[in-house]
Structures are given as C-alpha cells and as structure tokens.
Image (cartoon, rainbow, N blue to C red):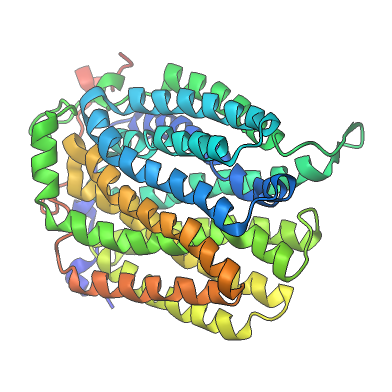
Amino acid sequence: MAHQDDMPSIIDRPVYPPGFRARRGLNWAFLGFLYTSYYLCRYNFPIANGAIAKEFHFSDTQMGLIISMQSLAYACGQWINGLICDRIGGKRSMIIGAIGTLIVNVAFGFASFVGQLSLFTLLWAMNGYLQSFGAPGMVKINTAWFHHRERGSFAGIFGFMINLGVFVINRVGPMLLAGFTFMGLLSVPALHWRWLFFGPACVIAIVALLMALIVKQTPEEAGFYHMQPPKGAGDDDPRAKTSEVFRKMVSHPGIWFTGLAYFCTGGVRASQQQWFARYMTDVHHIPLNSRIFYVLGFLMPFVASAGSLMSGYLSDMFFKSRRAPVAAVLYFTEAAIILLAAHFARTPIETVVFFVAIAFTCNSTHSLLGTAAAMDIGGRKMAGFASGVIDSFQYLGQALAGVVLGMILQKYGWHSYWYFMAPFGIIGGLLMVFSGHTITASAEHEPPPVIPIEGELGGQES
C-alpha cells in the first residue's frame, strides 16, 4: 500500500497550454503506428517458424539459431544505435530503421527460393540490428513530450501499440497461410509463407512516410516552449555528445539493475512469443487456422496491453513514479504462474489460460522498465542510449530463448519449456527488490512544467 504522501496532488500535474495535448496525441499516434509496423516485421517469424522448418527440414536447434542471432544483433544494435539516436535525433533513427527493416523483410521472403540456413540467419540478424533503431528513437522523442509524472501511463500506451502489432500479425499471418475470403467477395487462396514478410514490408513503407511528414521531435519544434528545461537535460537541445552520454549512463547503477531485470523479461517474453505457436501445434496439434488459435492470438496481446496500462498507471499514481515495487510483484507472480503451468497445463484450454496469464506479467514489466524507467533515467538528452542499453539486455535474454531453448526442447521435450522460463521471474523479482532507489528519475523532485502559450495565443506549428 502506498503511503499517503506518495499520492499525486494537483500540484504534481503538468499544466499545458491549449492545443498541446492534441498535438502530442497526433505525434504519438504516428510514432506508435510506426513502431506497431516494426512489430509486424519482427513477429511474422514465429508464425512462419513451423512452415520454414517443414519446408527446409530445419531442426528446433536450427530454428532457434535464427531467433538467437536476431536477438543478439538487436542487443548489439541497441548500444550502437542508442548512441547514434542521441546524436542525430529520434525521428531520423526511426526512419533509418524502418527503411532497413523493409528491405530485409523483402529479402527474407525472396530467400525462400534459396533455402539456405546461413542466408536466413544472416538476413534475420540484419533485421534485428536495423529494428534496434526503433525503440531508442521513439523513447527519445516521447521523453521530450511527456513529463516524469506521465511516463508510466505513456509506457502503458506504448505497450498497447506493441501488442497491436502482435495481435495483427497473429490474426492476419495464419489467414495468409490458410487462405481466406474478404467480405464474401474476394477469395484469397493459401499463400506461401514468404508473404508473411512481403505484406508487413508494404505496411511499414506507408506508415514510415506518414510519420516522416507529421511527427515533430520536440514540443519546441511544434511551437510549444518550456519555461525552463528539465533538470538533467542541460538545455532544450535534445542532442548530446556521444562521450558524455556513454560516460554518464554506464556509471548509473539504475541502468544495470534495470537492464539485468529486463534480461529476465526477455527470457520469458521471447520463450512465449517465439515458441507458443509451435507449442500449440506440436503438443496439442492445434492448426494455425483453428478457432482456439485465433482466440489465443487475440487474448495474449489484449491482456498484455491491459497489463502495460495498469502497471504504468499504478506506478505513476500510487508509487510516485517508482517502477521497482510494481515490477517486483509482477516478476514473482509470473514465476508462480509458470510453475503452475508446468503441472496443470494439460489441455489446450488450460494452456491458453496460462499463456494469457504469462503474457500479462511479462509485457507489463516490458513496458514499465524498458520505456518508463529508461525515460526516467536518461532524461531528454540521454533517453535514446538509456533505452538502448536497457533494451539490449532484454534481447540477450531473448537469445537464450532461441538456440538454447531450442536445444533443450530437442533433447528433453516440451515439458522442459516451462521450467526454462520460471527462474527468470524469480531473479527479476529479486533484482527489483534490491534495486532500491537506483531506477528513480534524475528529475524526480522537479516541479511539473508549465508550458507557456507563445505570444499568448498558443503554440504555433513551426
């Protein structure tokens, strides 16, 4: 229970001029939809996993290798691209990532005519690196637009946009593989799995163009001016020297506590998202176009979004924007759910229930730590690198959920699946318990900003 002094008051709330929230909402919508498109071009692989393995006779270990190399490349890219993002700005970073992702997804589809494991692995690793421009870019832009007291709620919205991408690909992907009829008029036959990569590439091209035309990197670019820059930002210019960013961030203990906990989030999140389709088809013999799979494909992103929104709101409203207490409860709850699943997930319905419950917990910590905590620690100048470093740990955890989990499944079978995930929840919870105040914001005691109306008429578009 939060102490009464931790409860927010009217004084804590940011005061904005007319038009600011609407412009911020427009900004965030197109940033969010672009990041949703990134996920269409990333989580198409789990849907194609079984079809690729069947066509080219790849083992679980070989498919896991593709997943692991993508995750490792993403993790390395977060460090590099986080620094680049803080230097060139979030908007350019997101556009670079979108163009690269588009090209690589098209190439991955055409690689089906070659069928070489090494080519698939190389291309998917390139996709991981290029996609790592996205999260630092989006977090950096939104750090300038959202005050400290609003970032937990923002992280919840961020989680919703991610899960929208997961929901769409989970819904549309099986339809493309099985064939479908559109509005009773247009009949689309079953398509080759390569269309799971061609289709999302077209989507990201359109959304990236709209984002480039509409999004402003800072409120100042949109004509809204702060009375004073946030503490820890230095000035209104969101760009920072690379050496300064690196030195300050790697010496910040909150980066390491949050990153190690995020490693645990990645281990569970990838184990579920990358392998759940194979689990349902291999263990319960549920086809991808079945009703139960559609229900699971809807419920997982739905509860993941609800968890992201709830955890962010709780941390903002009841814990004075402290992220660790909420995250600790989520990690321990997650471990308990996974251990229960190992003993009671015997039927398809029971498995669906446990998958949905795990999606709630792991995606809650995903948005809370990878977004809100990164924004808090990095501030306006360094949010890109802070996000990159923290997110890189998640993808190191995801790398274990690739080739290592694939080898375990191949040797010990699917029952070992649950026991692989459980320790991550316990370790993540302990890290949050012992993190203390290391992951609170540098601007925690900063008064909420009052953004004056330019010329007494409101912010004008630049």
